[in-house]
Amino acid sequence: MRRIILKAVLVTFALTTITFSSFAQKMTPAKSIKAPPAVTLYGLPADVKPAKQLRIAEIMVQNNPFGMAVMQGMLFAKEILKDRNTKVDWISVPDFDPQKFETAMQNCITAQYDAIALFGLSDALTPVVNKAVEEGILVYSFNTEPGMESKRQAYWGQDGFAGGKKCGQLLSDAMGGAGKYAIITGSFNVLGHELRRKGARSVFDANTKLKLIGEFENQDKAEEAYNVTQNLLTSNPDIKGIYVTAGGPFGAAKAIKDAGLTGKVKLVCHDWMAETVEYVRSGQVTAVLDQDPFNQGYAPIIAAFNKLAANIDPKEINWFAGDVATPADVAKKIPLKK
Image (cartoon, rainbow, N blue to C red):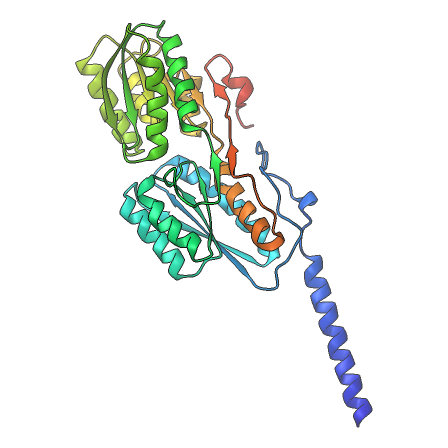
């Protein structure tokens, strides 16, 4: 009888070993992970499977195509971490209201996530970010810092001031260094948007031949950018340039097209979104600076997994320099999909 029981135990142990062995073999090695078309992955996950499931949240607005592009990066990270015993959740915030972001953070703290990847928004989030870190949660920010004095451990994105300065120079050059211009920003409450606006102003304000008409918010919405631009073109027929710091620039491009001012009013903006690139090809957008939204959604999640599962620390600051596309080179830099 003892032999039968022992034999049964050994068989059970063998089956269990085979089961766990098979499960382990299902983990796709990092070197075998293939990036989506036209994407260069900013980092790969460690070949580790934690015994306890890891839970990572990503908090982001989803009211514009940029947010959707960030989500695509998150979804790819979610998929490749599934076989590494890690669950990734997307936490959507409807707009740039700091209170809504704070609530989302508080909910993640209460839910005891291991890590949070956060669109930083502004220094209004510094207290809740610090609270999360003090409670042992990794907080990695992307696109915008949650205040310059927060305890977040790492950041991914573009240098906002440098990006704005670059776009300011592009617009100044396109305008021939003279004329009236306007700025449309997403929100004066978003630190990243403000850094871009101030970066561009550092160029514009140094040139007395450039005259600012005004600065306006569009809350990252294309329809609002369209309305603002339409009003600007109607009330200022001699306007020569517009800089859009954030989401929805294709709304401004459509207004320029509808007014029959293609090539006459210069438009400089951010992000190689399909909706924007369409207007680069047709000439309404003079120049567009990319900032790699896919990796902004992807990289912080992978870095959080690597820190939690393999104790691999990321660099504190991870800059995405970005490239510029213009009507002259867009066909080469962003080929049409066949």
